[in-house]
Image (cartoon, rainbow over all chains, first blue to last red; front, side, top):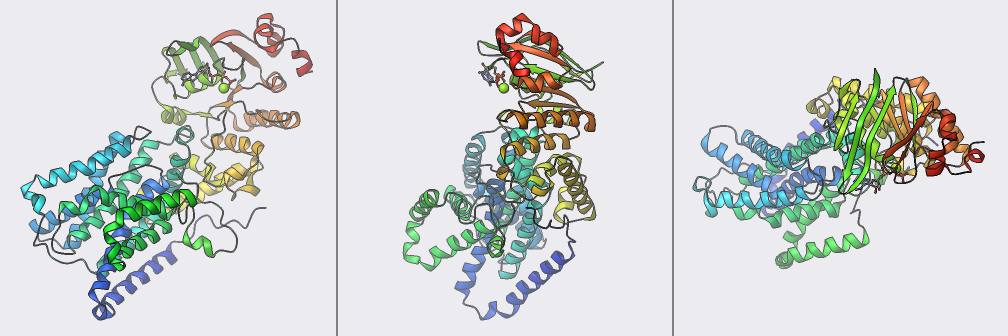
Length: 325
Length: 259
Ligand SMILES: Nc1ncnc2c1ncn2[C@@H]1O[C@H](COP(=O)(O)OP(=O)(O)OP(=O)(O)O)[C@@H](O)[C@H]1O
Ligand SMILES: [Mg+2]
């Protein structure tokens, strides 16, 4: 039985209006609620926002397109140092600096992705892992970038309002991309590359697009981080951070955007709220991953979105739905 | 001029000559069969034509120009569509989206127009949606448009794969054992479908099939492969009588089977 066919294309006006309203709410909270909120708590919320940005990019690359990238923190580092350089050396608005930092990360993504994504198999995992390491070694040995001691004296601009403005922009960007012809192609890359090529679709190009977009939003997360506590250090972008982000995507569910975002919020907040166990973070993540793989290999919301859970009829798979990678 | 021409085409996998010295010419509008025992090299011929493998010997011409080395994406874009012996649908996509993906190459909106839901994106989507639904309708698949492709019964999956290949508007369609796993009445229905596809879409068809009733029933000419080499080519009547083919492949019971 066919359900009533959903309209093929909806007018984007309602979406734009909702988006504008959400931005207004964010800045309303910034103006009227944040001043009365415990700065410690606000700090956790801002940190969650940065995790959301980093995770949504990897959800696109790994969760929807099925490409195993292990160096997401490397792109955050490019965004963070790119932003810092722009802000230190020019008089430009710091948020323009964050955008440029994102572009720098996207460019790094292009350089890493172009040669690697032609190949199928585990090359991407190995190369991105190496990229993460090389970026850190480069920063540590470049006095201009502050070396291992880090960069200090950066302006503090990242607040709740800016962070969640970027989060909303990123979520809208990635959601709309996934619900377009590109999103269908990403899911098809994950399901069957050979069949997709037989339809005349350039799969390398599709993978590079997903990868570069993912790197851009990781770069934005890094840029916001650099303007958060007046300083950045290479140690903030180590391989462990890449694994954190990976864990959030896998736990949240491949083929889902809301699942990884929920996991990102939970896994960023938990260590803060449970200070005593913070030292065991890696062990807890590892255990969580193992248990998930056994009990619920598709992750929290694998192939679904949060909103699907509130629909009475099971949602038909859409471009963004589907099996685990 | 032939639409497709293989000239002394061959490929080696290590010591194995999976296809050797193969000559094949398909005129525009042909419905040509490719048969032979298991492991004869039939699927490998498709993989050579579609660029999944590059031939180690010989040449392949499509519309008079060599497509050797062009790669699967460009060869598909040039007008060669195919289905796969082991069905390759996009399991995570709906039936409708499986077909819509095939229109991706023809859409005009840029990445940013898509993200911003610009008018050009909306036009693209509306057109892809209408075209895909129309195609599904002609294949009797419209009632299942919103279902997951992996929830279709086997026979309909084969149909969907043919519909998806046709969405790229190919000039040449390669079908790899479309009747595999079908019972005689389903195979009979498929035969009519293939004929109908050729007439409706004006495609030239190269068909691999083990169901002799299907191949003999609809193909004008048939090429027989054994151990990678062509052992016979001719009309179904000629092939059925050919002692070499009977020896290598058809066996004695062919008349019974095609009766
Ligand atoms: N990638 C490959 N590497 C090595 N050998 C291969 C490869 N692809 C095919 N072969 C070999 O080439 C020969 C022909 O295989 P092919 O799949 O073309 O046969 P077929 O005629 O399609 O058989 P079937 O009727 O069983 O589908 C087989 O011996 C097979 O093992
Ligand atoms: Mg075969």
